[in-house]
Length: 263
Length: 309
Image (cartoon, rainbow over all chains, first blue to last red; front, side, top):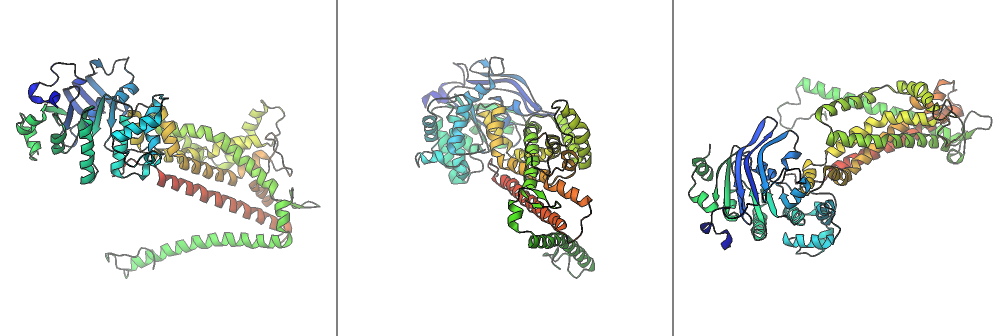
């Protein structure tokens, strides 16, 4: 993992970051969820977003694939760039943005029908006419759901366990071959054993994807991420190499949060 | 005292007010059960008497329903055919509009639009049936005559249109409930996979809600089957069977309404015939209502989940 070795480089110094936000402010009606957030996500890195509940972690994730705008009453100021291009320019098709910047949600929402139906949904929406079964198989393998073989394809999604549902949702996103993976609370609502297995899966995916994930569990951020962003009441208070942020936080509130003393 | 037995002991049963309340509740329940039993009992008794005079085979196989004629026909089929025409016709007219309305209100309408349209739908369901009946006879039929000059004064199509209008709110409200039970996260995650909102609604929400939608249609048809005033006023009461919607239609209900206005000697065959028809109507609506309810609640139980933790 020398490319990600934090000692030899400063984040995003040499190349155009795959994602960046500049002066990002997001409001839902009267409520301001994010205030003037600027952040760069370098390609190939795994970035965690930590912070107290309601600090805007999910909102920040969702602004990276234009999912805030589907919420009635949302408004946004500032610029988000994807590989240097303005995410909100007229030439950007929001559907295409969401395929290239895939998102795995905190809750595993199931579509009606089988696991295959779930995986094929996004592919069909894209107009994919190729080998849907082949793509689904590859995605399920990547998400660790192929151990039982092809019969998983015909299993009703509702019959899956919580862990399998989470894996299926990850596979659903991987099937579209995204450039970036946004993951909201990768292991919430899972029992500890399942959580640790899903965490291993995310760890394995780090080699192939730029990953941005939000988590309430900062020890998980420590285990999985190269860079960590600390959000507090919608403001980005600190962002840097995970090691540094954890061992030597610059902002006292970061330290309070990490040590459980935040009021 | 079976009602409201307290398990915590916070309200001891010996409290006289508790006992009075319990007694009242039990009394009300008994009254309701007794009334239902009386209706079914009276209906059943007369129906049994009727079938002592007229064999069931004639009831099922005669091709005319003319109990007061010289050579009476006692076939229920013509009345069932008329009822089916009205119920199907009304549903076919109402369903497309109602479904579009339900989808629009649930997924597309802004708050203000939705509240205005909800009020309009609620207003439709509060119109008395007799007003609908006059509307059909004095407004819809003349208007349709402009399109089909051959339209009879009493006809099936006008009745179907207006019964359709009457059952529209049932389909809209219940289908909307079924669509609303589809978790929003399902639609959101579909959009996040690059689907348009239209695709998410048509390919995910509608299929997920289809049992509830089907239930709403069955319940609406139950209302159409039981509907009396509109059909009596607008569709006439012909004795023959016609499948032509431009001609009159006689249903189970419109026959009963008509018969009840004449003088029928208790104990006569015509008198018994009315009860037999009423029994068929009751069985039909009771069965359809039960089916519709079952579909709606089954749909709720089957609603696909986001993980509900």
